[in-house]
Length: 130
Image (cartoon, rainbow, N blue to C red):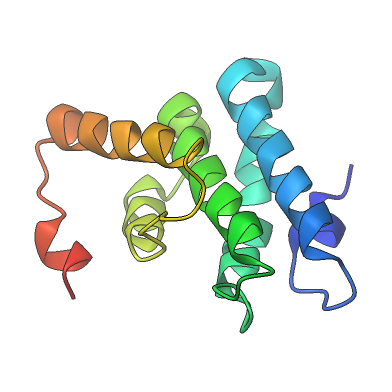
């Protein structure tokens, strides 16, 4: 499956489709196990593209953006060993926060953030408040 065509920077893809695709990637990251690790790692670039769209924080697109942020969090948490540049991905993910509209996905992402702080003993606060 070419996830890039669903959640990437293509302006013709409806935000509802990007949202569903990002949600599906998050489910694959959370429940797919090792057989989906490579797929999830390949999905990182299109997820970041989805978040980086000019319209990413508009009312119409914000849920697709929030789902993409949460999917990246789940990839980091459940598939970290498949990400060669994990530190850079974590840093880039922190720049995508906050998740403020999707009340179902936000707790997952913030719990993962707290787990990262605890596990790696890093303090993202300076980056988060910039």
